[in-house]
Image (cartoon, rainbow, N blue to C red; front, side, top):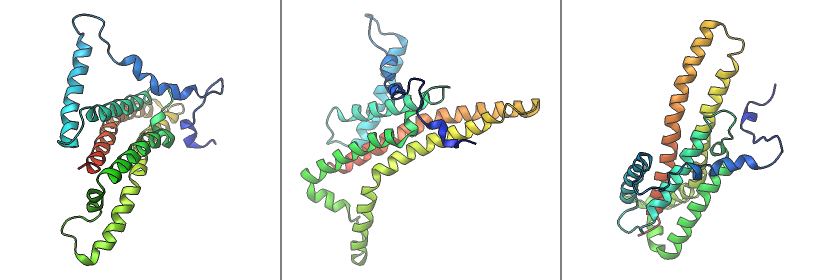
Length: 224
């Protein structure tokens, strides 16, 4: 019996790294302007981007730069598209691997920390001790807050990968039982997989939104 997690291994008939190219298929689905009058797809895409821009602007605060919300909107769309790709058969799911999620979370966290400590040193030190903390617990709170800041990129990456792996594993386990199932059991399994597919579609959107929102909150903490 093979390892259950082997379904997430990148495999190719030519033994190449072309599986990771699925992450860049988003470029082919972004609506472009080819006509004087925008299409309905472009108009819907513009409405979604505008709504996300307003929400990210509120999270980043008044001292944000103009392009900062677009950075997190692009990050959210990239993760959401990769999550949706994993719901299709025979398509590599890059967002379920820590190599991909850590490559997104670690550079963001490092850039926020370096920018904050070099430009707002006192502000970053003040974040290590919450308000109304007793004097006895201040040293312990500094240690706890330091550890929580260090593990932030790991928690972002593990949250995304674990949620993607959990749903895919459950759908794979149910799908492996359909070959030997009776008619009634087969209908139940198919109905259950349809429900799981709907839930996984919601999880794909929610996890990308959570990743972008938490990243924007970490960014707002490192700026004064």
